[in-house]
Image 1 (cartoon, one colour):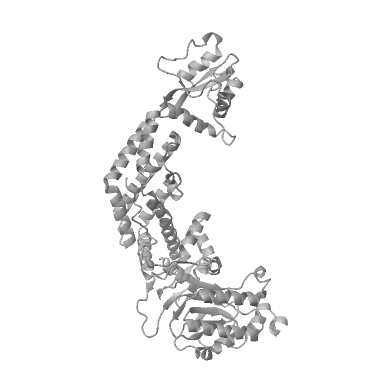
Image 2: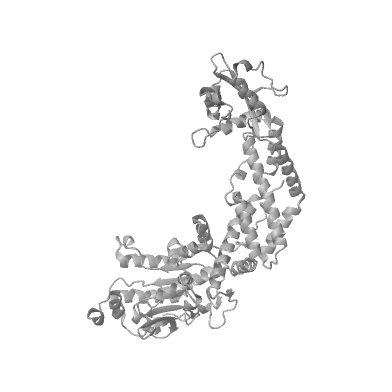
Length: 577
């Protein structure tokens, strides 16, 4: 059977030669709260890791985002298809982590391994048939799902698939009757085992009847020792080991030697004479020894198994296997979004901006909110949403506002929007239009143990330089209190130069800071760039209350020190209460 490896099929990664993917750093994933989000999507740690690996692998190729979005819409709108696929995945577990099919069906494999491989191929056949039936009856519209349906149809309709199905079916019919084996043991004058042989392969499990009953009765009654070895006239001894070839040790591994040594037949009519092989006690090799025994007995069957499995071992099972985590990705997100929408949270399908126009519009978000925060709320009406744009006049936002007013929340929310949109998932927004980013860079406060060598300011400078070097005009940069761990004068000087460099490169940025003067001086900073501009973004206050609403406006005060004082409770009012 020819391999289908030449044709790649994916509902998540469409093949375009010029598409470039960039992996978000673990730090960025954590700063964006993607680890928390993935824990909401799946309970299984492996599934969580799967979701993280997919969603953090970003490309700014708009074709990929559009492709994924349409697949997600199909998955979201067809809950019956989701259920069928999930039931299938639960049943065909080997496809999640297939292993045996990677090997060659060579002469070293015994009957048990060959039977296992036959079951894997049979599961592959069932999977193809189940996915085909599922997709053929679904109202799918996306290019990805239609391509998958066509691909599955092409597999199913090929003559080799029908031939494989027939061959495997016949093999299963031939081998499914193997339920037990009858083993003969030769003894010497000291009742020590000298050789082991196979008498028969049977289509029923042993019970206290027939051969076993005869054997037990023969041992119990001295007067009934059988004269000869051919029982019932149709069982023949097929010697496996030579005389004196340490047969005792092999029988011990099989569990049978215990029967010979401990005389279990004393009460044989109550106690079965079949000794079960206990688990995890070093006797697991018994099956492998039996493999050798049965191989000799079933030479024709084993040969037929090897021939058929060698013929089909290179089938394109890898392509079907790869679809399992891809389906899991879409299905888990669909379940999650459905649950959030049932609580009244707003979601929409993102729209890619094709033409930026004179303003250079690169994002227009209406009603955006932080999904990570929203999942901890009980109702959608508790969510505070905001509007925000990125264009030439608003390339870098210097975000200021009262402490605990939601600056970090809005900064994180924007990053999550791009991650979800480019992952093809509905976004937490009423309307979202955007130009995809090639990567997201974050600069949030570091842990104390990471700053011991360079000091906090030194560590921040090194990190910022690294992400600035890697960022492009297609990137998104999210800065949270960057350069605020030193004196105001030093922090302001470094921050001012950094923002100038950012707008010079045209990087979409939100710079969350307590340095209100930095926002006030946005006009002076803009003199360094002819095209891209920085602007002041403010979290509004409503008296003593926090509104968590933002707007483009001058900072509400120069009180950087006031905010710090409030944070640590050392204003005059707080100290003298």
